[in-house]
Length: 161
Image (cartoon, rainbow, N blue to C red; front, side, top):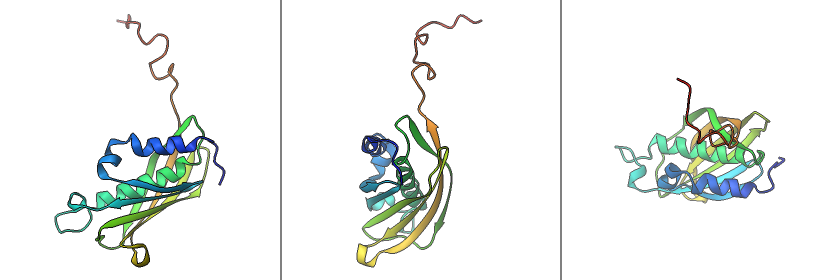
């Protein structure tokens, strides 16, 4: 798949380093290429629900962010992606010491990207598919300083009554 931003790795790094929730969760980037992303999560008790299995919100976040990152690898330097819709199937209870997720772009587009993620638990040789998500990403244009209120008139007081 065509990558439109030669410096896409800077954006991918930002997606992991600048997202407080992703950092707090502990999600780590393993690999990235055009339209594909792999992440891992070392599990701890904070990721579990009341019955000792991984919380569905953890699985959904991992699937969503990994798919979003796969999509972000294909967009232009002045763009970013936002999840417009996603559906997740929770196939079995997730357990173990770590989760592994692979996100893949199914259909790249200028305004919409469709991707999927598969989340596995366990060691690579014995991993079980625990969740599968389909994610629709909206490709957004980053606001310029002028359109975001940071332009030349941003410091002027509002004189409209």
